[in-house]
Length: 563
Image (tube, rainbow, N blue to C red; front, side, top):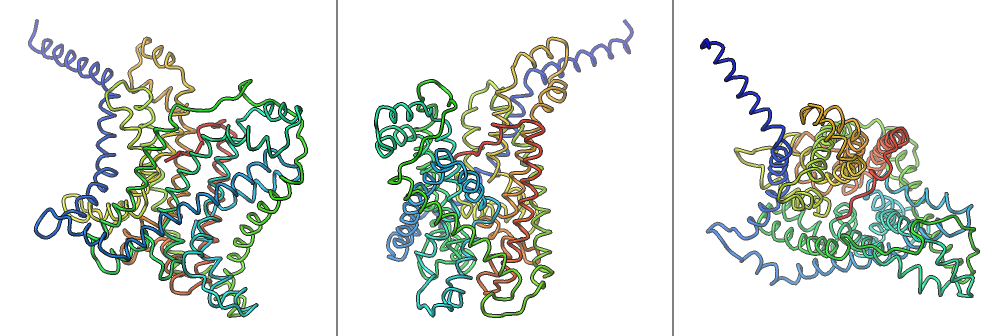
């Protein structure tokens, strides 16, 4: 055999071996790469915060923790934060249950309006409610001036009210889904046997909803104590961990104490995350007959109906008033103080530039997050390597972590070479990617469970490579999950505040930070107009998502992640 021919055969054999190796191990290689990204952009920033909290000028120290536990102020901050979480959880569950019960069991004419109004806050930044409360009940608020009231909005009560209004939709969605999954035959049978509506609620409906109630309670508690915007705007002199962390970093430049506060804030979130997984994973309550069946709606007794109507009317009325007030305030410099109707708030250059910046950051984050989410879902479902459960937990954990902590973590982890990202747009985009990765991963997992593995095996048996099978078969089927991850990440990142407020650089402001600064400095008209413009953008995103859902029958791939 000629040397040239031998060389060609050796090269061909070597190429085939490489190809065979890649086909056999590409999922594992992809999993390793994705784990590296999760470790670098999610775990490493958290470790950086932990390390900073125990490292002083001379090395390891617990002095900063001793300072935290020695000061009464920090105790009050921790107590207020946990109390806020507990109160908001209880109130949101009560209101969410009333809304869910009325939209699933109540009179038909009320169901659709209550559902629409209950979900309206999803299209708005959470801090919209702090803004509306200032317009109504602030020192120069409409109600305050109208009735010459002398009360103090800024403090614990103001934060509780704004947080409650912000998280009612979350409680409602989770509880409505639980109620819809219950078999109504159980309640109908009890009613036919003479049980009162109150007895049915107490002995059948609520006990069967226990897993859904617990899941909603855990998630609401975590998100309430981690929410930054409402507390930072309305807290006044009342200490809360999230705003105190922001003040410690931006006001005093004390990264050590800021890291300690972050660790204390993250501790209950991590505990809740593991409690949630332990109590709820793989467990559910089933009802006789499987899926719900059609039944005639029964009349709710006045003893139950009247309180439900009072609660739901008050909650939905408050939501509508808040939106209406912010919309009206967007056409005045300060609504109630100045009477001149203006459009200048919508034409403000700095706020429009901030929105343009937010769109850029959110688009980059959405594109990267959707791709990583689909790939993660694939390796989690199809991979057979050790550590799949850990990768899944890590990919979902960003949703459970306070944005404040991740913001500080990115600031600490990526402010020096060789991984210096601060001052650029990518640090903002990557922060959003790994905070909101959970939806893309969950949507991808749901979609993959609908794809029989035999389809991919048949493709491989016919000689297609792994890449060909993935490109020609898997990706087209998972495209709806990609769109779900893209749209959700985009519309969530564009209103996100708690993490990016630490990472924006001078001269590159984001819309959420612009609203926050404007609200703090009393530029209510600018803050309101910027909020309305963000709402319109999110509404457009939801319209696109709804269109894609109908066209692709995405269905269960859009379910919300739980922390």
